[in-house]
Length: 67
Image: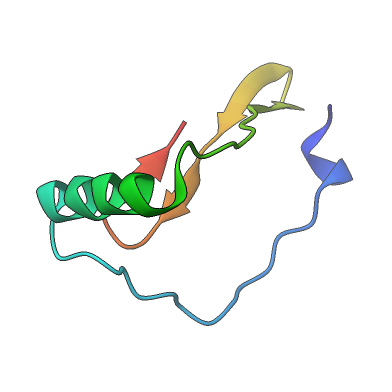
């Protein structure tokens, strides 16, 4: 899809819950013990710009990008 089909904005920053990746995985393990299996859906944003395909990445926090 053409990139012009999308709009981009800014939001207030969300601060990361965990100081490190191992701490994040430990929090996820603890949540699994309490709640059980997490159900989620993920997708890829593929756009067409300047005659070339581009994959848009989502940025989580300041150092982590999700593909």
